[in-house]
Amino acid sequence: QVQLVESGGGLVQAGSSLRLSCAASTRTFSSYAMGWFRQAPGKEREFVATIDWSGSSTAYADSVKGRFTISRDDAKKSVYLQTNRLKLEDTAVYYCAAGAVTSSREYRYDYWGQGIQVTVSS
Image 1 (tube, rainbow, N blue to C red):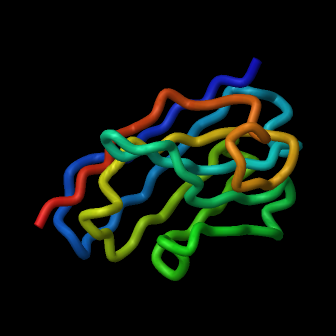
Image 2 (image 1 turned 90 degrees about the vertical axis):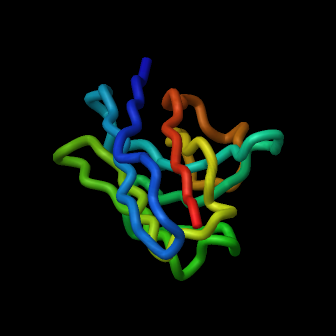
């Protein structure tokens, strides 16, 4: 089993930044692709970003491309999401996930964190 725990969320003003972290409890962290998803109130969970096992390939949703950056540190068994120039519509619960391959599809991921709230205000 893989345990994933997100941290770094909070309440910020539009235009500000947050760095979300996800710590994994598996010894084989370096073999997993990692992803970030988010779910706004009353809406479906949506893809945000993903990074492959080597850290050499990344992909982003169009809504966050150019503003968010996903990265990983295998030594720390962590994946990060740097969120810049946050907008009101970025308000959501953010989830990190681990899977076999990079993907924008939820079903491709096998393990999920509990989620962390990001709230952007004006």
